[in-house]
Image 1 (cartoon, rainbow, N blue to C red):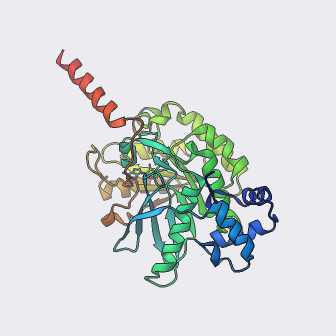
Image 2 (cartoon, helix red, strand yellow):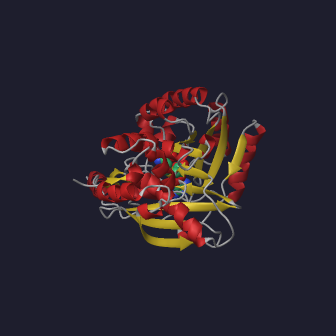
Image 3 (cartoon, rainbow, N blue to C red):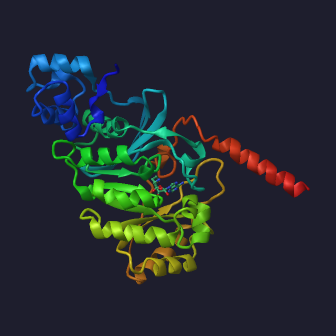
Length: 371
Ligand code: SAH
């Protein structure tokens, strides 16, 4: 029988596990605390746990975090890790420092099923969902490394955002359990306003999220009409804007973590960045409590888009500000190490064969054009 990885368990899950192995349930939160608050990687570090329990735990379970393939430090302090899972898949995690605080951007899937046209993870295709241990393991590992590095004073992970590889709401159960470990006072003890799920708009997931985890919400909008959004964020064909925004609104109504949704909008030159796009967006979001994050497009090889001109981004932002919106233009961080939004790529063994299918489609179109 394979050993249980303790990083996979929520606090309740650990209590049940301890009962199963005939141990006192009150020991579970103690071990949970060692794992997440003291980021222990060995049972012998758990000084308030008896020797006999430690020996038993060594027999039936493990503490197995992801393995570091590379660790890159950017000039601006951003750290990017390429991590290897047990089955040899690669994912990426990024830490973006801000004074003594910092945001950790984590992945939820190996690759991504959605095929957003401006995202490099999309180009990689999709392999599988990450387990809870692999998601929480990113936070556990980053906390250990940041503690060990201590390059510029004390830093800590104050925010966690699901903005790495993958669509979190398509890996629902593992993402929910991970959020609850992040929020748990015996776990990472993060405030629910500081754990953010970013979604491209998977409505069924969003509709059931509030019952399971109350966290902050970000929506990758990128276009304010269905025609353009279908092109940029193809999941929009399934859940169009008029279905998506009411679902977001319902989430905000029920959530105490997220009173406003963060609208993410990647700025693509000549595609979605004109004043008329800004006015259209202002009309669309008029009734929605939100703040708007404009993200200059981060280029990557084999992609047709260009970053908007800075002056166009300012004009776009001004129009929205004049209409009363809170707008932040995101600074690109860690771009010298390709750690910026949409630049995260792993070695994805693509089970969806996206590149192959795209090539075939292009060939079919070329043949059609010839005829
Ligand atoms: N699937 C989730 C989370 C991953 S993407 C989502 O769609 O929200 C995190 C953010 O980075 C999203 O807003 C995404 O649209 C944005 N992004 C993706 N590729 C980008 C690129 N090349 N340049 C800038 N932002 C990008």
